[in-house]
Image (cartoon, rainbow, N blue to C red; front, side):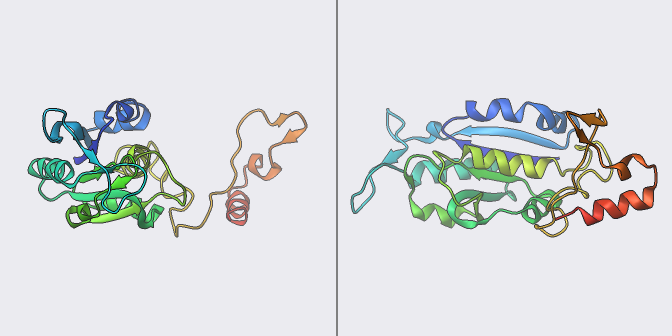
Length: 215
């Protein structure tokens, strides 16, 4: 069973996603175990402070090093071999091959969700891999964490229905190839028809059409 721990200031953001659809099915199948760690519990002082202004000035607040490290060390005690991931613009662009790599790895995952204007850069000394989910800015790391978790967990054995469901998907082979178009009933909708070859029953021609219509 793969263990996934997510360090966040807003665990409620993750609850619905982690307990719905395929993520719920994965837990029922004993393929994955999720837990969220509230960063606020590791905050400093009576106010449980987790952020502070950056040295050198500038707008916004940064997550402080002490609460972040304490939370990571807490997660590591529960799963010492887990890889620590940090969603950040400084990371490498996340691809399907990364999802496959994490899914095939027996190690658990600890995902740290940044917030505010960012984090004390020294936290990277406790991080195994920095990941960027795209060239755009979000308000925090929770959505990137959901993207990483969803893309990995759906590839775990027993989560998807068909034996070849994952292998025939977009990006699965080389991070580039887009899956062929697909259709279902009705055969005709507002003058839009299903390609004739798909209802021909000729499996070789259907396979050729699908290959030709990959991108």
